[in-house]
Length: 438
Image (cartoon, rainbow, N blue to C red; front, side, top):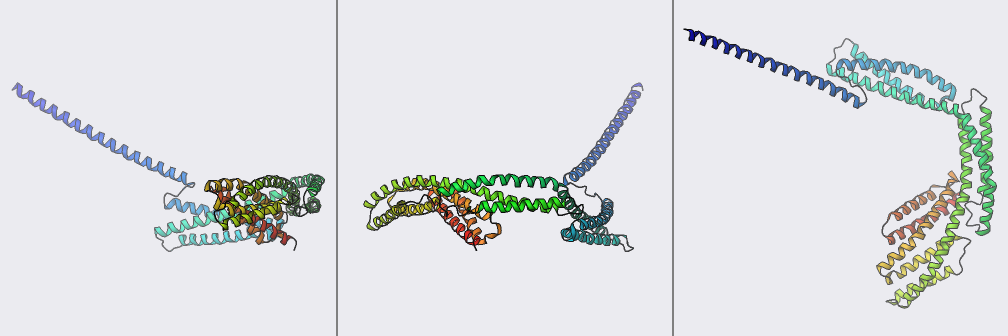
């Protein structure tokens, strides 16, 4: 009997322990599930916040936020349009209707977007029931219209702020222009002396592009000085809104004078470079003639010998006599004669010799092409609208071919391209001068 009681008590104890263990496991499982759920929600909220931050704007998470944002932007745009209307009146009074045209157009477009936004808002507020999709679409449309219109008005307001700032800065800018006119005027005697020295060494044809630059620069500086004084006189008028434009015109005129004087210095450097190149090319050509005569005498066939002989005669006629007072023209004739000789000798030279000779010739032709392009650019820049599209088109092609030649790895092909560039630049120069003298 005693043992039976002990067995019963043990059974009850086991059952109680089992029940407690089951309860603990169930509670632990519930805690884990709740923890995972909370963690997932927290991560979802974090991902939404991160996405909004990266996007640069806060995207409405639900229809309520979308509606709230649309209402805020609609009120803000309504106030912005009213403010812009006042600002436009000030702008027209200060700068005139013509200079305020873009602001007027922007305000008209913003008013149109505002009206359309209010129309969508009215559809949302009327008694007719709207689907959830319609509400989202119309609120999104209000947001888009309001944001784009407000951005457009802000840009125009910034433009007029910059315009007003120009007028505020006009006195400082005017002082800089006056200093530019004085400094450039002080350069005129020096450039006049440089031009006189160039005239002693080089022909009138070589100096044709800059021969009138000093006198034209003097005229431009006089005009710029007068424009600066006129702008200064307008400073005392509190209603004047054209001071900045007058200062800018004076600066542009003085800058043209600077370019004219710079062109004289640039041409002097170019002519010196061309003269040095001409001296070296003459020496090289005399050595080439010795080789060419040997090749003529040992030509593989009569036709090749005759072609080499004709090219030799052509090069000799260019070398004797040589006009050093017109280095650009002499270089063009000499390089043309050398090119003819190269073509005649091509069949008599092996490939290695051709590449070596082309590489050596390429250096000089590139120098010539660059110099001619630079001179033509200076001529066109100093005459602005006085040169037509034909000259500018050929100059652009010369520049393009020069870039191609500089990038080519095959010296033979690069040499041909560089020669084409020089030809186009000479054509551009001739057309530019024709236009300028019409």
